[in-house]
Image 1 (cartoon, rainbow, N blue to C red):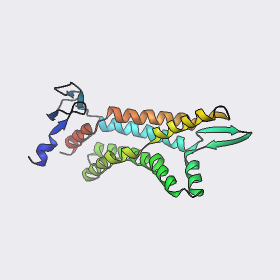
Image 2 (image 1 turned 60 degrees about the horizontal axis):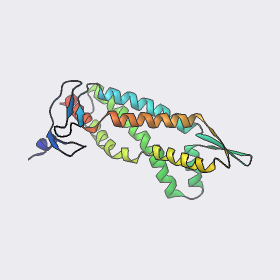
Image 3 (image 1 turned 90 degrees about the horizontal axis):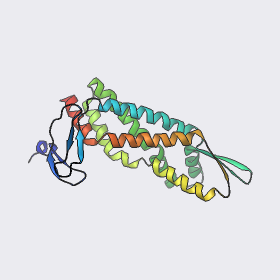
Image 4 (image 1 turned 135 degrees about the vertical axis):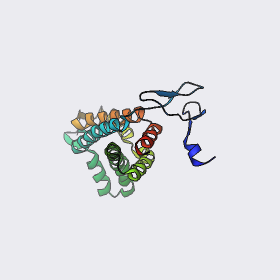
Length: 206
């Protein structure tokens, strides 16, 4: 069995059954013959949709980084919490490794992922840059696991529960932007499957 034959096979993510990929008409859905779980679908505008989601997400991400997430008042002292301010404090206090990891998972990875989607959307619309598009799509399959803003938000909420009795907490605009960013990012992951991106890639550049 050669690589081309392997490219035409797909596993059901729900039950693991092996199927042969087929070309679908626009809007049609391929379901597993065993468990009837949706495996992929055909959408002519998949990269345009991805472009729109990514542009929205990166706008929200910029707001989440430029403005304070929340304001905490403890014993009359007021402090604003920002993502970049937190990273700066870690570096300033000598926690270089921890600060670097947080910089990667909270800032660099989300930015690179969103910009990659935007560049892919532009290139596929123009039907240019096949090799660049392919490289970015491979990069996305790996980089997505490094974007962990949702975990960061959960950690903030857990910390706030412990501070409720000792401090006055005011949520700022960046907190709302952070929640909206996570929702858009989750919507992108749920609505766009990697196999659909690769099939559209083949149709565009064949």
